[in-house]
Image 1 (cartoon, rainbow, N blue to C red):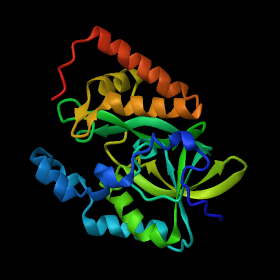
Image 2 (image 1 turned 120 degrees about the horizontal axis):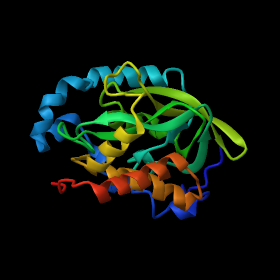
Image 3 (image 1 turned 135 degrees about the vertical axis):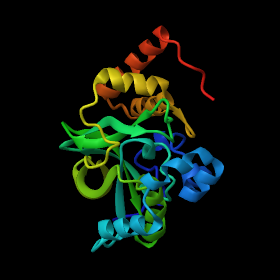
Image 4 (image 1 turned 45 degrees about the vertical axis):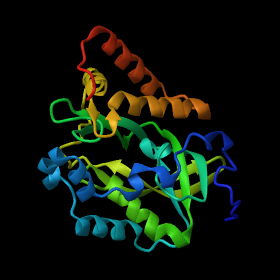
Length: 247
């Protein structure tokens, strides 16, 4: 594959919309570091993968793979991948949809008011971004990626086929793990709205997370009625309910 040396050659409009890895919180993220900074998270340690478990999952996911690696992003990875990438492209994944179905009691929620994060589940299709990592950097960059995305068992690291314009590539992504108690595929829309409206964690409010998704799509000219409707209903909820100020 030809390397343009400009990761944003296909999408210059994203140059100012994607955080530099050098300034990303997730670049140096570790479980121990998070707990040291936020001691209340210690009670959740048993829910998280150990380093050995996580590295075994990474080795299994990447087994037999050679060359550059594509990563399909559909949530916060779109604006804050924390990865050194050679190329970013708009991408479409058939057969899966973005669902707010992952209960979160740390990043964008709390034990008292859980938030909801996005996961990929079977559905009508999903728009997102694909990041290409150079072969020489796959080891280091996926170690960073797995520390973040595979912190616990809510996701399954799998390769899927995504479409970049007229080209199809295999891309690593993170699917909802229905065996995890934090994944709720049957969550009603009203509960999604409430969780997102009230959730706030160590990374900020759950609403801000959803706003980032919607605004990122606006810059790409992508229509995502599910996310737009969800944000509209979250804002309507906030207008009619008293929500405690964020800490």
